[in-house]
Structures are given as structure tokens and as C-alpha cells.
Image (cartoon, rainbow, N blue to C red; front, side, top):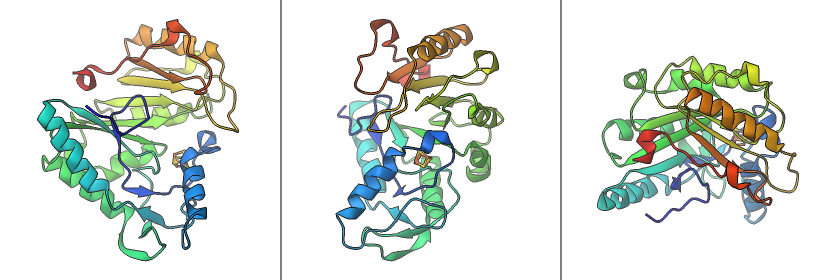
Length: 263
Ligand code: SF4
């Protein structure tokens, strides 16, 4: 199946909107904000999309793209992974919307989120596996449909952590006690105290360092440690990158998926 995403752990990336606000140290060099600002400079009326009191830009093609990926996966008799999204946080509090020219639109990001969840529940995307990655795991329980409170087979919920200090977000995620929970330890910018890591209830771990001009260094020892902890807990481990420039050592070129995603 043709992938539209450069992100190694998904097939496609879909953004319902662009824009977000920073949560923790992992957001410091937010690539999405950089991309968005770069694009804004090229438009006459582009809006500022990062911050608590700013608008979010609705992406018009999001739902038609999902329809296209569903049709393609069905035709091939496969399940396709959808990361939603790389330029937004699906569980951010609801924000007002603008179009690409900065015109204010009706509705909010909360409406778009709700529409997507309803479509998934209605069976529109039977060949898609949704990967919802958030830095706001506390909002997941409040924002998902009641029917998902015990987890849902084709939806994975993940959170990003970056060091020992942000490990508390993993604890918030685990409070959900759902099936299909994953941790994205990316960008990892500091050590994580190994004796504080408890992967019980976590179904998948992705790890990687930061890339880009201002990247903070990644210590390969963190990867070997995490790989060992995942083995200990029997959790699939996916090593994404050191910094996108340095080659990944052969014994770290591990790209495992949970069984359901892998089928
Ligand atoms: S949560 Fe993600 S998209 Fe939002 S500011 Fe942080 S890194 Fe950027």
C-alpha cells in the first residue's frame, strides 16, 4: 500500500486541523509549529496557529483523505495505520477555526474531533487503525465517546514523554486502563530513571531522539535501556531515530508493532 507519511510507524498521517499550544519540554522545538510558521510567511493572510488564545486552521481535505485511505485499504484487503495528527493534538481543548486565508469559520476543533469519532463508531473506517497521540492524556477520558470507555479495537491512544520529569504523563495515560495504549518517548531529551518505569498496561513503545537544527542530544544508552525494559515487560519496541542523521546501529534497528497493528 502506498504510504503518504514519512513517519516510520504509520502508513498515513491525517490532520483535522493545524495548530496547538505547548505542553512540556518535548514541545520546545515543535516541528509542526516551525512548518506552520514557514507556511504562514508565504501567505498573505496566514494566521498564527500556536498558542492558547489563537485559532486553529481547518484542513479541508482531512475527511476525504480518510475516505480515500479506507477505500484503498479495503481494496487491498488490509488494515492501514492512520496517525492523527502531526500538526495538531487531537485531545487539545476545543478551539475556534479559521480557513487557510484566516477567515473565521463556524464550528470548532471539538466539532471536528466529534465528527471523526462518530464516523469511526458508525463503521465508516473498518479498514483503518487510528493512532491518536497526545500530550494531554488527562483529556482522553473526557473527550472520547462513552462507548469507548473500555477501549476500542481499532483505536490506539498514546502519549509522548521526553525525560523522567514527563513520565507523569505516562501514568495519566495508564489511568485509563484501556486496551491499546502506547508510549512515544520522542523526542527523548534526558534520561528516564529506569526504576521509575512501569510498562504494565502499555501495549507499545516508540522511542527516538530529536532532529533538526536545534536538536538536543540523544544518548544511545537510553535506547539500549528502554529496549531491555520492553523485553522484560514483553512490550513491542520500535526505535525510530537517533537524530535522522546518524545511522541506527544494527542491534537497535528494531521496529516492532502490537499484534493487532501487525496483522
Ligand atoms: S503537543 Fe505536539 S503539536 Fe502541540 S506544541 Fe507540543 S509538539 Fe507541537
